[in-house]
Image 1 (cartoon, rainbow, N blue to C red):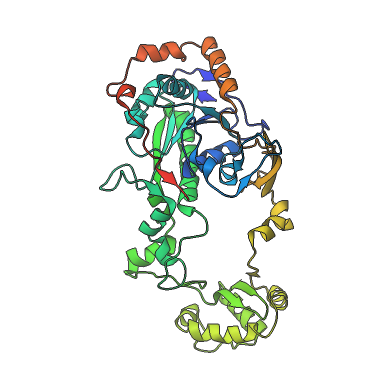
Image 2: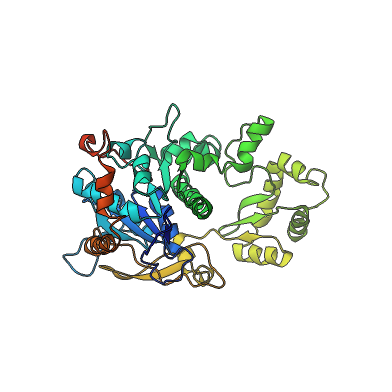
Length: 438
């Protein structure tokens, strides 16, 4: 529920299943592209009601493709699979924030919301009269998640942030691929991680609000998200002064750990402990007590020789053979699956990682599902990603109803607050979004 500072509560439509732990919370999604929408989708997966405000032409990801999905009706618009991937469990309303009507819709929703998520360039919402200070004037209990490319301040705080740019600037590409050939990851991990970290921070702020009864601002960025997962590669430099480099498909600090070629295809294995190394050595006919391989540090130092010895053995038989041998020895190993293999894999489906929803124009479709389960709570069924403006009428009708029922939070409250100096009248065009992932 939306617990305002005066103790009043405002009902929000629950998650379609009515079962989510965040049921009753209202999230106003002002974000675009991927980082913000991924964060709000996570909150929607957990039961929050998410109202996504889109420009009249729609979120830019509606045009990102191919591939596109074509509805059976010949006159229906095709749908971007990119948009479908990060917007389930949301309602879509359209509003032109350059107009008084569009900004007023956002203000009305902000008064009712528990959370606002935005990823405009720093300063963009201020120029529209919808900055964080204004939002907190309208609703002091709001938790605001602000996602940017490189942070809200500092010498490069105003830079637009696209995922691949951030991967390069944050050092990730220098660690990915073969030595000397920087490669971006196959997924927009800067955007996705910023969304995950942002959603985590929102949940913490909501818990704190139970005590303070006031909202706050939480911030993250694509840069922060990637530096935040540097982990042992970052500590190698900050503690030991070592500048890590790409090591291809082999682990930089553990050996043997990585990809190996068999007679027919590739497998991966992980000898991540001394016991696993000894088990692998027995299974492949290596001498576990060879001084060059006796400890992990020695195996890393002699990695090239060790990998050559393993490569000769693995090349003598098929992947199926070696996976069976390694499984019997208790050594973690696995295949390298293509995406179609993953979604056809029974283990994926048994874990609930594929869900089906009834889309307004596409009909029954399957989507990648949420990455968690609750043993004593059912999070399904999920709502499909919305078509553009699908909920224009229903959301506005709901606002009319709740504003009439509780006018102290309704339009009269905005009029009493008065205009914001330098706000909407001088806003100009809406700047580009802060985060994206082509």
